[in-house]
Length: 112
View 1 (cartoon, rainbow, N blue to C red):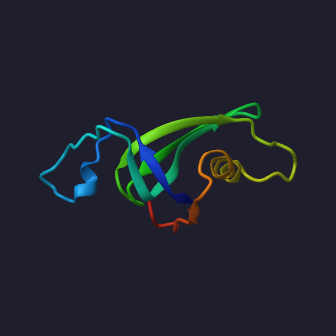
View 2: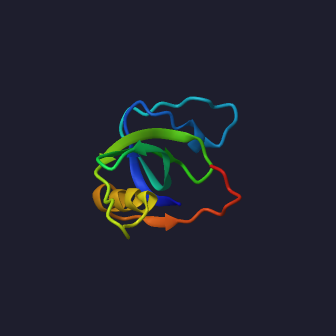
């Protein structure tokens, strides 16, 4: 699962992928760059019952190269019957980071 949302890349980000030109490998932004309908997915997570640390990847679109990564922390709910860690991570993102998102469900055969 991933999230489709608008996000902003910081100055100095490489946005060459937005030009769809194989001869262009690096274009750095001078100002923040807004990506509309971009794709955000869970890249990595680890932790225990006291804290989960997870990294998300920002992409132009599903299957594209990672433009940026960001790490977050939260305390998981570990009571019997609570939602899975994956659901808690995406719930944390939707409530605390990305207010206006659309869920994108992955097929089992797609590796991004």
